[in-house]
Image 1 (spheres, one colour):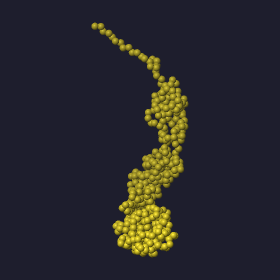
Image 2 (cartoon, helix red, strand yellow; image 1 turned 120 degrees about the vertical axis):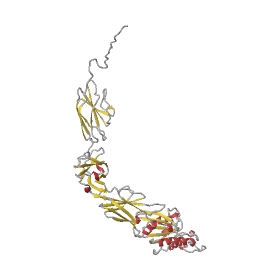
Image 3 (cartoon, rainbow, N blue to C red; image 1 turned 45 degrees about the vertical axis):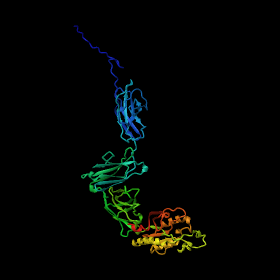
Image 4 (cartoon, rainbow, N blue to C red; image 1 turned 90 degrees about the vertical axis):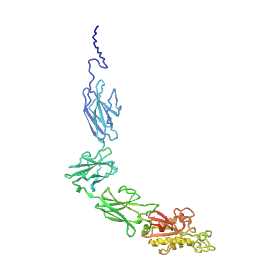
Length: 523
């Protein structure tokens, strides 16, 4: 058997490099740095070994950069970066910073004279907002209060005309924060108040708070508003409030409000069918601001609760010191009845005259300016052969009037004035109420047909909005029949009442409609 020896043969193939030569070595830029001032970034570096030029590209993407290849020009894209310059120097001034907050990232690559690029880059970064102008407007009126375990901090922000964007509140023990990064950030945003826990206060050294005015990019001014708190007991005024009550007054003419607090000022807001969302709730009505521990709101400032029109009021009270109000307000609910409302006064009641199906109106006799039978509408003649106007049908009207008379007498509803149409049936309806309110005024504005009929609805609307004597109500008796339409009034049945609350400078508020049989059922 013949034995052969196999000798391996190794072939060296040069791939772009001659055998025995080394690849081109070029070092990335070294000791790169950036100095950022408003609208300008100055990037500097030292050339790496064998570097002829340096490429500078800017991005805001913190990811791995895309290395250059081949020949590039200013403005070319390198992944998410954009080529700013290709320089043989060691400094570049970037004056075209984008109008964004950043932070910006600059990548620097070296290139050999033979065109070889470094695979890795030197990278420098700015802080967010470094290239923007710091605000100079000052935060003022920095103060503290406390509410239970919470420290309340409040201040006055610069005016919006200064391009105000927001603030940063910083806490630091032992010394005043010198920047928005010098301590623990308690709050950052556009508000004019915030909270911290009293347990964060040092028991052995002052706790300092600073409020810095900062722009939309987080660049902050250098002159903050500051305060120091040496202990929990030095945290400021206690704005805690509790025990708010809302009850109808003994004379039923107001809502008595009372509360407990040591705060120097109290703010009370009333809302309808919902609680207040804060001391500046636009849906609420401020009923009190002051330093007392009780107040009264007139009952005629609100409307009664009705089954078909529920009105449940919530009174919310905050303890305040300056612009800072408690985060935990005290609340009380309140509602009252139509009966209580009428006893308080301040309402106008328009009644359709009682049932009058006896005889008919002789409108063919003409109106007041054309008739040859003067005052035919005032006649009380119930003999239909000679009657000129419809009269009360006593079998029905007596019961209707008795029900109304009984309610108003039994509940001592104060009536200061009664007006009536000139028709006999309306006057007798007013007389049937049995209320001593002086002489019943007969009004042309309430009188059907014979005067300015086209304006009667307008005139009646004006009458119900005439405020009664304080603490009393007014009654008006008229007709539900109109030549045209007249909201609310035209839908009334005999002896029905439409209840209105007059308002100064605004139309009367329609409250509800009550039939003669419903008076006895009112709670």
